[in-house]
Amino acid sequence: MNLKEMLIEAAELQADAIKDKMVDQLSSDAMAEMIATKINEKIDIPFVSEEKEQIFFEKCVDIVTDLLEGIIKGK
Image (tube, rainbow, N blue to C red; front, side, top):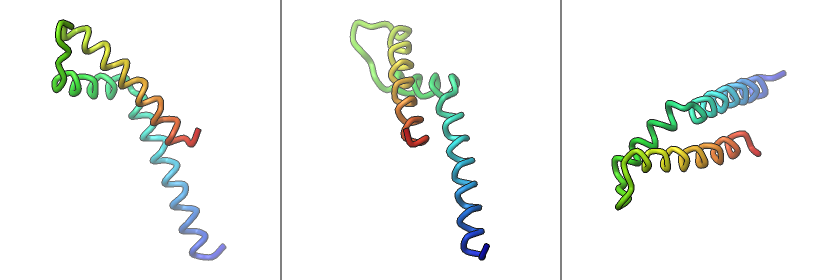
């Protein structure tokens, strides 16, 4: 194996490890709650309580993170 092949293999292994770490972070409940809370702070839905808005935004974030996970994993 030459130097170029070794570097490519090392880079691919590193990219796979980073993908796995990204998926773990995206799928964590803490990350979803944090993102939903930030969205909730910026958006107000009239006549809906903050608690219900939070639940709604957490579900939206869950959908988006599932989609991103699929994209990252190549599915």
